[in-house]
Image 1 (spheres, helix red, strand yellow):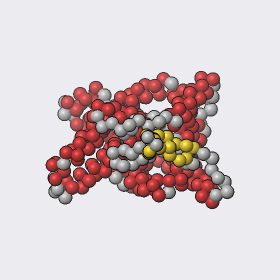
Image 2 (tube, rainbow, N blue to C red; image 1 turned 120 degrees about the vertical axis):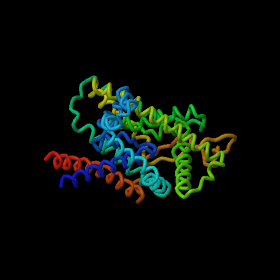
Image 3 (cartoon, rainbow, N blue to C red; image 1 turned 45 degrees about the horizontal axis):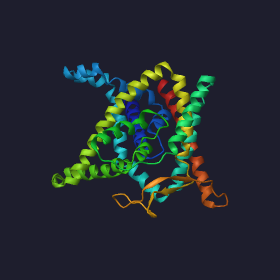
Image 4 (cartoon, rainbow, N blue to C red; image 1 turned 90 degrees about the vertical axis):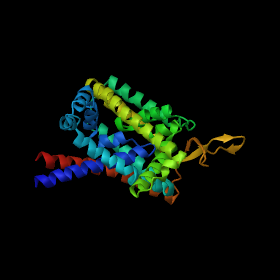
Length: 340
């Protein structure tokens, strides 16, 4: 029984990582918010903080087992195995669904974020002046980010490294979508679509014994880009988690209030009823290097309530809210089961 329970816990943690990885790739959805709702956010931050000078000493002294358990590697391995696996599975399905059923997908995410706001704020009762101002400030920042215009794509490796640091913030800051930030920085398609696709293709070829990619300058360049982006992400995870751990320890309520405000402000990013505003140069829509239209921003509008499509979308919003409530209930039941 104990072995079965341990296996179930590990599988559930892997699935949590899978959910976080999928969320990280969707613009407007925060992987950190998913980890917050699924109840492993603080353990994740704690684990990243363990990657420090003491951990380095253990590694240099070849005390690998001590290093493994000191950084809480059993937890990190399962979460990030799920997260990485999702990039080549669940996230690809999400890409297809967004292309095919865009309104309904965004409606579901919109509902999930509303449910997440309820989930985070339901046990937060200390709405004093300081916390209220913090919540309003977080909301204002979230709204401001949602109306920013994207920059131009830049494959300079130093900038790619910086994108890794900033993009991974969606995992450590609930409500902040790392993918959306990458869109604003102009590198979302380069880093999370093209480079990931090239990496997957390369790994598939290597697995079959085909090393012809070594003769392709373009392929090597993409591998350099995804490698540098990964290094930047790892660096960003460790540094931001140390900062966040220190901040959470001293100002936990204020940080929670800011997170509630930030997530609320970010609702504008995933508002389902919107259409793209394309960048126009010389009376023509500007195309990027892949021939895709360059999106400048989004025009948001209120839905037409006489349309059947609108009511279906509202149903998906409600389903998104219900999904978070089910996860909340499941988490409580599971905690009771484990504690019992």
